[in-house]
Length: 527
Image (cartoon, rainbow, N blue to C red; front, side, top):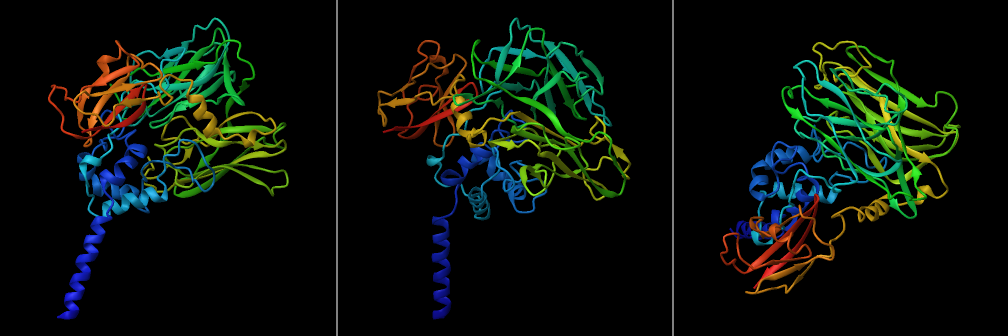
């Protein structure tokens, strides 16, 4: 009995200890969701359900566990690159610590914890992150003609109407209908020679002078070049140029409307010291064949013979395959084949998550080195993504049911010291140039506050379209202060009341600011 009693006591103590240290939504988990999940999983986002609150996340516990546990078929958040191979900006992958926290939370019963300590969820809208920019180019309204068998690939050409050469320092693609824009490639038609093509089989321009600028896939970030000393990068665009939209609408999108737009941000006229960036399919094979019922490995290199004629600096990389893709990597190799410069390795290809990956540091490719790519394709019945039953012979083509082997790069001519630039720091510094991208210098006084309310002050005036909300600690909207911005864009006031002007209880509150898609928040304490 004594032994059983001690065992029971030990169990009780262990249970209490475990509950005291259990991971909770309010204490540990919510912020991870905000940082890594809710950019897609929010109301109106591209994901099929929202995960911005405990009430939304808790019922999805089993699905979340299945998406983040080891061996999950489709890992979430989606981040295909192998981070042990190379490092990139905008990394969405869960760190080991974050994954452990989430798994402990799920295994511990997905507890909410103290609701009064829950950080407020971000505020999302469908506007831009970087602001209005200098030029907005919008494609015509288009209704998808995708069928159950064929995706819809269409191309639109829209004049920029520029009267002088300008240098692009940032590009943001805003899908007109996030539900149906599978991806888009944005090119600059420098000579104005391209024409629109809505036959359903267009995915690339006709002229070699039309150059790729950027790409959009769901969840991707705007292309922001470092634009402050000591590294200014950009792309020139001149009079007579056009923007070429290569749009992909998947099956199931038939009859749905889209009108995607591109926002260009320019350096001020006369800016000096800007280094030109190019984007090209550096590694590619356009003549391969994938026999049915077997795995096939392809390789390609640039140049075909010898090495690159001059040293270059790679800014970003973007592999591209379709549904039969299994894995793909790209790297640079020295003339004696002894030095390998790793650029990207995607061990488990996912057609639905691809795009440009910006390196944390410029990657030098010395003169004489060759850029190589390797890819494996699974054209067997065991591939659950195989579009053909039974498997069929597949070759290069534009449709999703065809295949591709391409690795795009953003690159520039190398200068000594390029590899030492920290792109994360330089891009962060560059973002302060865009509306709403700095800290806003937000201050609150008095805080804690009592009956008189609290003043919220900003060093920079808020944009008239900004959103400013007061949330309680459970993430519930208390009051919208946005209507004060027009009158006093640098000074707002919360009277401590709800939207219906009822007195709020003492406790923890948060002010959340959405300035052109950039979120800021601060704690408020009412006594």
